[in-house]
Length: 521
Image 1: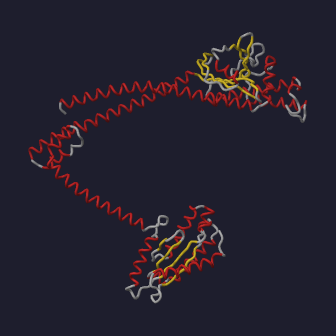
Image 2: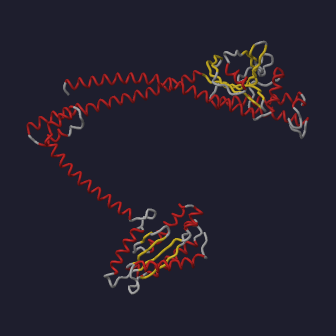
Image 3: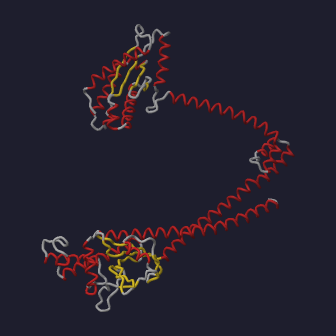
């Protein structure tokens, strides 16, 4: 490889490497920005889904949730709930409430026969404890299932010109210092400027637009809010939070991963491009140089032909190759043109033969069609004029009940019946040409052995259809029924094939009338 070639490769490599680095850097920035936007939108959608899910779960409780919240707000300080309660404890709390309720109000139902406020304090407290455990477990379950870090329900309140929230269901299990039971009813100030979305959800009674960003015990989080509305009344606000650090980490990881993929792809593309430049241009120059030297020494036209093959474009290398081998290429192109013309003629003939063959075939069954039958009739009539010993018969076969099959089961099942009948006809009259001349009509021209055995073959055909009729394992469209009529050519009365065809058609319709009353689908 010469000095000039090495210089070209070096400059190409340097240029492509610089381009790859710039493209990778810009692509990384664009990817990060897009991923940041997409991930934040996805997280917002995810938080909305979780909040809506919890809202629907609580709303399905109906008035029972309202009873619980009213009692909880007024008696949370007196409620004793173990900090480490579990699903089994919640079940026990439910059983305890139902036992107490049934003991006092046997055969009655809460909210229907017994108003909540009319119940004894003991039953009310058991009801509230059971419901609190149930709702908190519901929130904790959602936290685990949906990958959020915090889920809760709060009641926003305005107190002494300050904006506060009262925690109904708090996802943080803390002990009360006084007795070690669950710390309930925390109240925290939530200024409007820092908690815009939460107050928006409460004041409007609709899902918040966007989410609040907090710095709390869980770190920096996105928080989304939706109101809980029961019987048209706002009861509380449901909040769910996800850690921003996890979102940003996922965005960064995705961006770096995509940059790695893009970087690897760019490196492969640069290598491939350099290889292409060498093979497409530099190697071509070397090849032309070697062939010019060999042609000069040997005067062998094959070397000029090798040079001509390098002219693959409008670049300077191709022009150089054309100038060196123009006379030889002119002759070679002429010969090539003749060969291509001959090939096109062969291809055209093959296509014409294929189209002619397709024109003679029935598209559904693959056997010969009406056009093919008409041509066969012309051949027979030509023989009728000169062959005194000509013997043939025509069998006309018609599929019964095709319209009923199509109307009842669909045209695809009707097509199955047609193809099955075609298969039977072709295998019974295997030595004679079979034609489909209509939707449900087949014609067989019986010659030679099939002509001699025509009556036997007709009996076999009818027996086969009877066998199919008695087969209870077949679907209705598989139980093909058909009528057959056979007419023999008589030179004393038949001046053309159509006369024979009409007699066969008449025989077929007579057979159809005989069968009509004996077959139902």
